[in-house]
Amino acid sequence: MLQITNLTKAFGDKRAVDNVTISVERPCMFGIIGASGAGKSTLLRMVNRLADPTEGQILFQNKNKNITRLSGALRWAMSANSCTLCPACRRWT
Image (cartoon, rainbow, N blue to C red; front, side):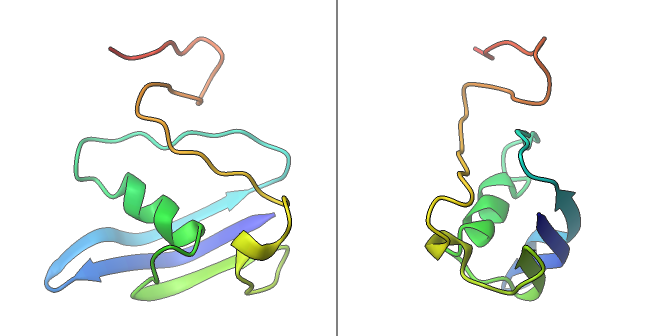
């Protein structure tokens, strides 16, 4: 399980991600949608440990680990051309 609790990423006075809490059970596919500049990519960069959060916690299987080193335990993808929230969603053009 992936548990994100009170995650925030600030760049100076601007908050790209503001107090996000999410639980993701495995196996699962989900999508993150929002307007340009809403913090979607920043959130995924923090989950993949490409960026450090300003505040909050990311746990994988109840452990605060670098999840990119868990040998295939998670596979996260960013895609601007698809929505994975539901089977009825289609490619946005």
